[in-house]
Image (cartoon, rainbow, N blue to C red; front, side, top):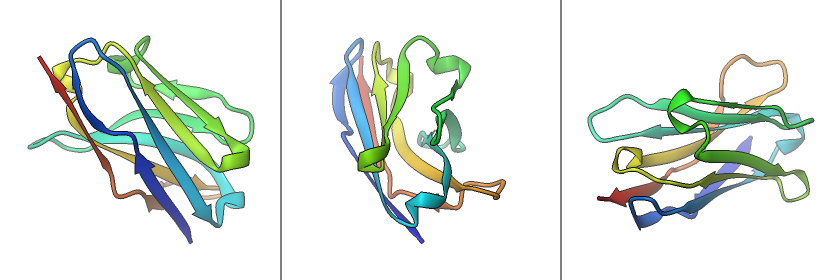
Length: 119
């Protein structure tokens, strides 16, 4: 089992910044990848960014490239999402997720943290 706890969400004006954190505990040694997803009201959950746990290659959704940065601290079992130049359309609940080694899907999810960007 892996437990994930997100933090860092809040209300920010357009153009502002927030940094989300996701702390993992439990069976974290089996982590292959950690990712961020988001879900806006009335919309499906969508992929935002991911990072490979062992050596750090990252992947981003096109709509956040150049604005968001995903990073990790292996010693703290924590993944971060630095969000700059926020737009009202970035308003959503942000979730972190873990994909374990040998598995194709993200098996563990956090409870989510609300990000609201005002215009």
